Length: 544
Image (cartoon, rainbow, N blue to C red; front, side, top):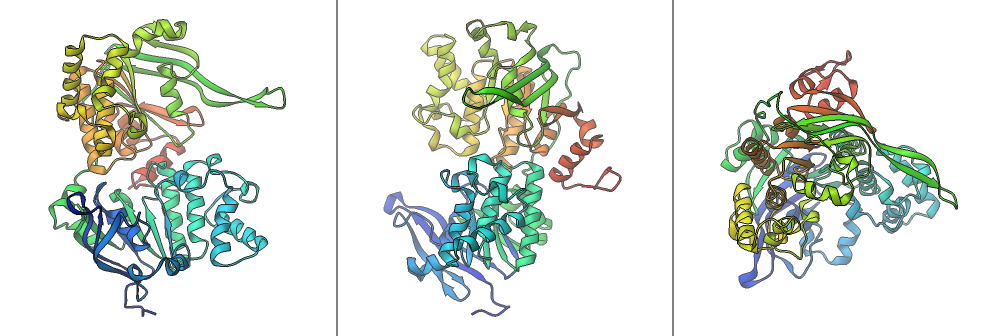
């Protein structure tokens, strides 16, 4: 056993590769870092820097033998885990070292109840009886703030929100009170308020259990709040490490300086208040019927959007903010008639609600949408050129030579090479795929674009690039944007007007500066406090 002066976990000169010979990819290239008992060590860097691979190497969770270690050691409490056999590692995984994965819904079994999945950890490692395990599961769910834990034990993962799924993952990871918790992007794509709750929860549980934590993230705001020490990774190497405050206040490496300067900044160009109204929604409602009984009678409605009015002018960005389930995305889809709705919707003065699908089709090229997940919204079977060309073919816009020219032009507009049109989506990074999604929308020369969480899963530096790109395109083509996001830093950098939504209704709306500087409603103040590291005082005012 180690004493208090020895790190609980010590990686030394770790090298992890995939493939061999000419096909070898050195994902982790000589990495060293330590995690002290009861402390939080953060790994930061952009996608592809090797953060997650180094963490997965600790418990040998990579696809061996394709993955292999050229050198190095992973010393946990005096033992080199790389030298341990699978049977010995199973006794450590989930017991002494636990891991929270980035995508909770992908990590939870969709066919098993949350009780069964959390209890499995206890049955395997603690050999508890079913009744004991059940009591412990309830205790754990209450510990992570899961409301009505007993009544939801038999619920399946998809019946919970993203924040609740992440709480289930945390409960599972903490079931055996591990000495080390590895948290891989534990708050990516969560609402700002839920993110703040999860981080507060992790900090409280760490203090209560005396647990060490290895935190992997690209969000530097989280690192500032959570970490004692930090390692900055780039291209499989640690380029800078040390005390978190020192690294942030006095970064010595150019890459660290680049990361710290990469957060979305600036404000949008002033919008013309007298510009033409491109899109207008008046008292828009989207109600989903709740049906029950053998005859499936409608017994009520889920009011996803409940009487919202919004105007979007040429050259203007309207930001729609709120937590998951507030109706943001549903409103965006309703305005471009991808969702059935009630109320008046007009586009350039035309009544969209009066048009059937066939009459609406000629207007489709003027109204486009960019989705949150670029990988999920791009067909893996089509090349980039075919993906961008699809809309041109549907709307019969130009011959083959003209279409090729417009595809190349669209790619150049979003900062990519025309030759890239012959490659496939999986060959690009997340930021590049989002640029392709924007090019697909832009090639049709639209007047109005719905941007549905287009930066939520991107690195900070890539977020800043996409924000700059969107501002440039708006300036050049006088585009009208509806920008849907839970990231208020990005909204502030892009939006002229902000609509705050909760439970399908507008809580507050107005000019962006007014909303950010002087929010009137408590809900808006809570969102800002969580997102911008502000604190609301007892009077409800927001102060730094």
